Image (cartoon, rainbow, N blue to C red; front, top):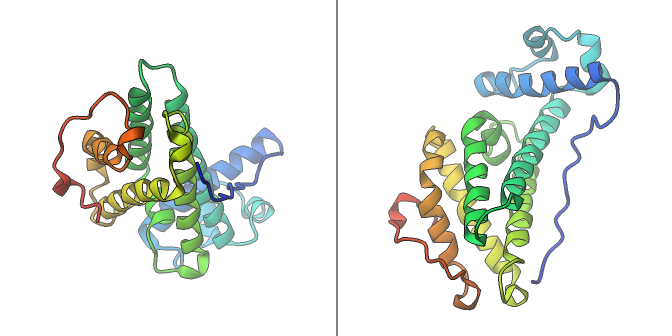
Length: 224
């Protein structure tokens, strides 16, 4: 399969004492909660520290400013979501289709569980200086990489091109973004089966699995 390079994310904080790592994790979670209500422009290091009980000096030891903390929080959430997705795919199951269903289900459930995080890295917020577009591109690039890994297990996968991968990833992202924008992220797990059926129709016939997904109503997805 032809493949474009996809740069991974570096969430930082990979070393340090347990207390330092725990402080950092609390700050990352707190800034997503804070910005979900007030936006990044109204968010301060002092407010984040007050929410977590982490001293202001500790915040400065982890991050240069609020924007750096916010970017790290988004990158961490993207990594965790995709790690859960690919872990679900590699868990033992009866068929390739069941593994893909589990992976897509994990992805949708992850977005549903932390919609404020997904909105931060997928939607264009009112503070572009924080690098929102780059975060969205990285999130979708990792989704593309994960889909490509799944498709490599199909017969004839060497004939698939990157256009197929980007088309599937783009369609999934548009559905997720629409539900997030409309405040309907809780509906995403219910779209698992129709979204899976739609994704399979994007594969050329020679690469489709033997199991046939049931019919679906494309109007429930709005993928265009």
